[in-house]
Image 1 (cartoon, rainbow, N blue to C red):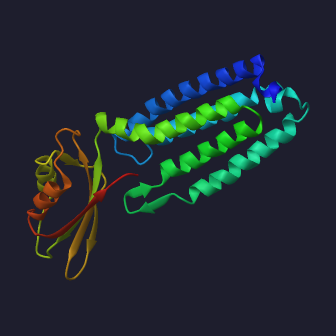
Image 2 (image 1 turned 90 degrees about the vertical axis):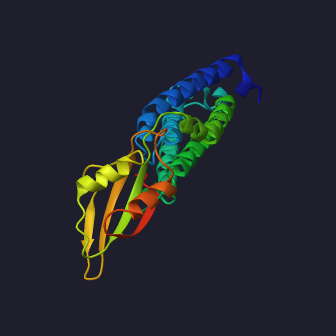
Image 3 (image 1 turned 120 degrees about the vertical axis):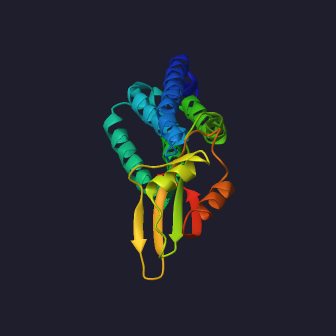
Length: 240
């Protein structure tokens, strides 16, 4: 075990950790753009994927330190094993992603599963310090990044299903003006219509002008219920 904690081995782990921390920060930066526009894949998902990818990439450059430096000429075999693990876990993560209407869930869970496989790989090749730090960063990302996202400016989106009476003759202009009174705007190109003999359905997405001015969903529902010819309304978060 002494070989796993030698000075060169610890230095290599420290370099890996520095790469992980920087990758997490850059993943957050890219993911914030998605969070700002109310997308399902936000800061946590991007941060986890970027950090796990950096872990697998940087550790491959320190193959001399794998297994405490005791095993030589196993790089090709180990690399093949890593490729198989990453591919297999990717299919496992895809199984937890669910799509219902305009809402997608499970992306962060899938990313955390993939990050967990990276932790296991680091432990397998003997990078215990880097694996421990990766686990701590991943846990901190899932615990606190969501709360941090709530403090940042954003434009959440809401999926709307509006039932209309058959004799109603509403206009998109009137609808857009109405939702703007609640701090939202009608998303361009999101409207779809279903015409039935006894009822009409409008499905569309409204996007908050900003988080500070957006009205609660209960107020938005009441406002839409008062729309000309409205017979009923259904709201749900739109994260796609």
